[in-house]
Image (cartoon, rainbow, N blue to C red; front, side, top):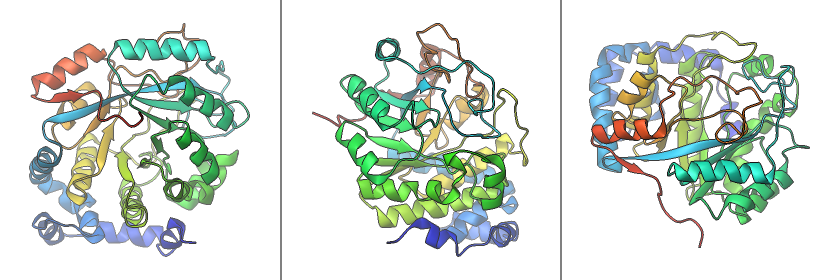
Length: 369
């Protein structure tokens, strides 16, 4: 049975990084002249050699995005169900070792959060939990999805990786998409940041999109947490992963997210800094690499950055996010997973989008009858 890790294991991290930094201006120019880019072209576009071409990349990215998606942008809202977690992760506020109030929403509290988000207009929901299989395992997730499926056009989850049959069960009950980030594709560094808990199993997490593809999920979201390792190598492996998944599970849609390390309780400083210009370069590189993939942007980023990126390549975005369970409607008693940067209200953010000539899409399509 084929898995991405079989391809991944043929690559060496240091050799890959070296090849990215060895790209020259001529490699970048060649990539920019092509309509269909190879993985080597993607390396060129994320290399330091591409920095002088950033304006050209941004213009081309904007043109491709407008051609493929029009003047639209999809809105979604994250809804945190629980901050219980059995993992130790060096970068996360929910880490088991952090002494914070823990909370898991009841059915009543879930519906209060739903009512709040529906009043704001949201129809695409992202359910988020810590990784605690006893507290927020499959039974809890199945109940939550069943509880809210009548209120949203599609439901996405970002939770602990599950087995194929467990994903099949949740799909049957209304699950539309799953986000699962590798955090870093550097095997040794991954172990340093995940010393305890089920998440410490690098291969099981790496195999998760394969299990999702076999389960028949409609959409898979992948990505890396920028700051744990060199963003260029992690981005290359994300792109490699994307192309493998598209070839193997061609009926499934895909999305890429771009989270940068943000402050949290007991925080971790980035090992490798990723500047705003670096992130713009990466987003444009992904758009040039794949005109169909959804590029998603959260409230981790600043107002100014988000104001600009919505016209350069992003196609899905959140606003006024709360990253603690019950953060929208229930009196907050638990710590946020990370600090957000863009704190504008949904109304103010939507007004900004419209001022840029963008049509806000709340409901993409009806997934269930």
